[in-house]
Length: 82
Image (cartoon, rainbow, N blue to C red; front, side, top):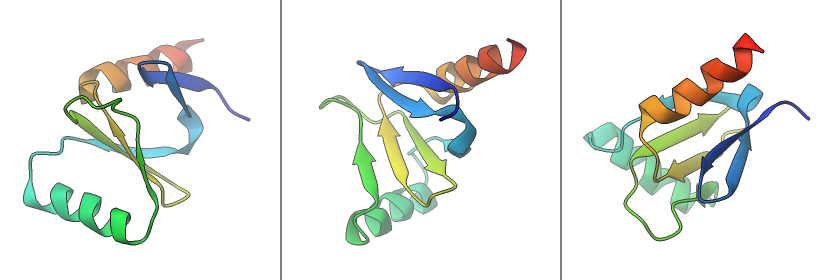
């Protein structure tokens, strides 16, 4: 297993599996969420809070997070420095 990063509220993700971190505001991002729900590959890690970022993994899982994309990318960058 690779390095884990906290994506908010005690939820962690394997940082090596993340392909993209995007904001949920655009129409294409909303389509990604909708289609991943239909395919049952959506993981909601927001703990009931507003979705602020969408993580797309190389295993075709889509993960919703309540943290800003800048926060998540900063945590991934910090891991790569170690």
